[in-house]
Image (tube, rainbow, N blue to C red; front, side, top):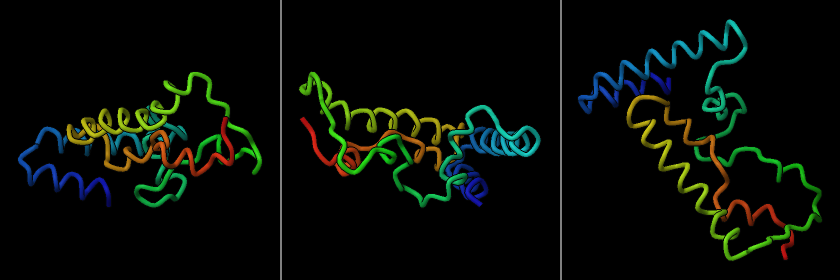
Length: 126
């Protein structure tokens, strides 16, 4: 459904090559997954494989930390801003891949946490 919708959207924008690229790439990836159990770039289908909703944060190691763990930020003037910047940089790069028909829009959901999402998972910090 997502592939068909994305292909229609690309075609409506006159992006025929991009639509064909996305259709072929997705069909090839799904065939590889069915045959081999994986494909190159399989992480880009993680939202579908884990049953997450669009935009929902991906699972991370932080989800496995005990309730009372301590986050220690060395070089906090660099570390703290980088927490949000990782998401922004990843989103910008993947958006170009989606717009070019290289990936489905759901690939945007395989991403670093936003700074806000990180701090929601941090019970205490130094």
